[in-house]
Length: 118
Image 1 (spheres, rainbow, N blue to C red):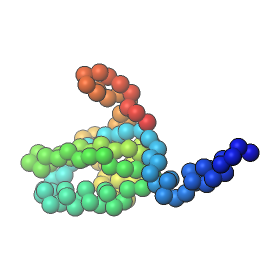
Image 2 (cartoon, rainbow, N blue to C red):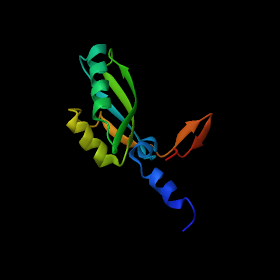
Image 3 (cartoon, one colour):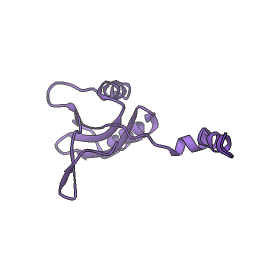
């Protein structure tokens, strides 16, 4: 075997190295009705999102208008069913046609339409 190969391979398998490697997964956007939620309620929800993150679902950002009662979230998730199941676990339901989860097929970067990096 090549000199040092096994040593390099063992470093790649080390847990500290594996935590730094972030696999790119598909992006999603979701919308939610948040009637009567205050800024503090939304902050607690965001904290729950961060606490519940795992290898399958990660919250990228939250956009909120408490006056109109709307919340838009951007996610990275393994797939749509995994995200929906994760949201249910966090007590965020997808109800009716006013709330939805959408896979991001294209996004704009500097006025150019591109496929999201995965």
